[in-house]
Image (tube, rainbow, N blue to C red; front, top):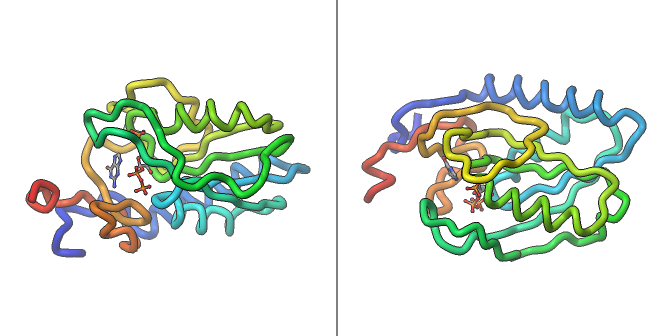
Length: 179
Ligand SMILES: O=P(O)(O)OC[C@H]1O[C@H](OP(=O)(O)OP(=O)(O)O)[C@H](O)[C@@H]1O
Ligand SMILES: Nc1nc2[nH]cnc2c(=O)[nH]1
């Protein structure tokens, strides 16, 4: 384990099995349709890459990058688009793919923003959910794991842009987080 980690919350095998299940569930739910997966950069990159390889209906993907004004606990809910979708989603079956839902503010914005673009359907898929932190209700259709309110990194999730490449999801040692 990386020396900056306190404990591994989800190991490689647990993640792999759950991502396979999610892919199978999405495959069943979208029989006969084409999916557009929209990954929210950068955190969802690793999850999306593994997830799409477990989906067996025609799937394309696009990406958005957003940043919230006001960091962490004082997040205002205002979101700025850093990178928009490449193409129209009008009439498409869209699944937003996130690494983690925390307050829900980012997804609330993204859902409203994307609904206005006229998709045929819109669902949310997240690898991790921290339900105890929710400030606004967001309809999560596919959730990998509900986790406690601890700061986690790995498998796409960062702290100051580090640790995204760890193959597991771990709790960062508080002394690293505070220093
Ligand atoms: O539910 P919320 O409280 O809105 O928080 C969740 C958002 O925060 C994280 O992104 P972050 O801004 O850290 O960007 P990153 O994916 O590039 O790390 C995560 O990927 C979600 O987009
Ligand atoms: N990396 C990371 N980003 C988050 N955003 C909201 N919660 C978390 C978390 O636990 N880890």
